[in-house]
Length: 225
Image 1 (tube, rainbow, N blue to C red):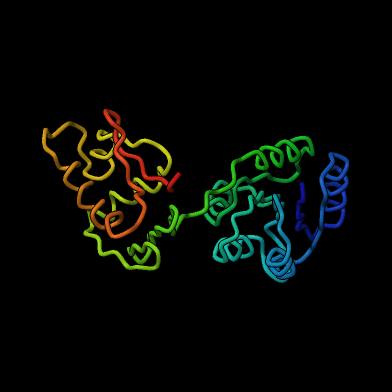
Image 2 (cartoon, rainbow, N blue to C red):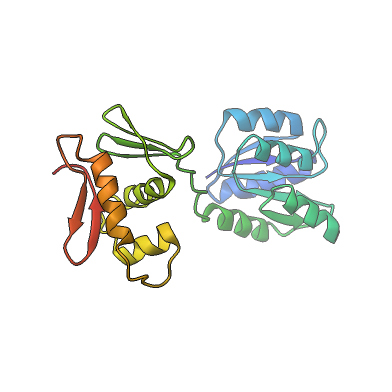
């Protein structure tokens, strides 16, 4: 694992870096917050271990700056600043963990390893594609084969659910819950009506159908097979 250790106390930096290296990690060390900010913009790290009291830019400002820049790399504050309010301030700034000095190296290693096992933050999806059908979730637009498709808000949501579940069967009950927020069967043909309208817009003007009815199960949107 590639770790950046930002610590201006030389003895602490050498001690922590030596232990992390012996544990099999690759460790870069810096003693300045401003340099650390620049380094994080250029190099991808899996965990950052950051002191709060740093020259150039303090650790709190460093972490806030990284989060503002969109970096989600896990951060552990390693610091002598140990008050409850200080810990809260550090976590609210965007740190994932807070370890106070003096510390046991075994605890630091355990916390670094725990953070590395966390699942990566999911990337927000802004576009969906199935074959030549495209959905822009930010602009709320739909296109197929480069042709714009005008959708009503409910039709757009219905298509989004189907595209997010492409190649899977989506039941009528699932559509009632996710598109109409119904947690009961309204005993109407609202799903069937909207599916028919959607099919008219995304399939009928084109050579191959994408939206299919799966008898007694629901609907599936997938590329031609």
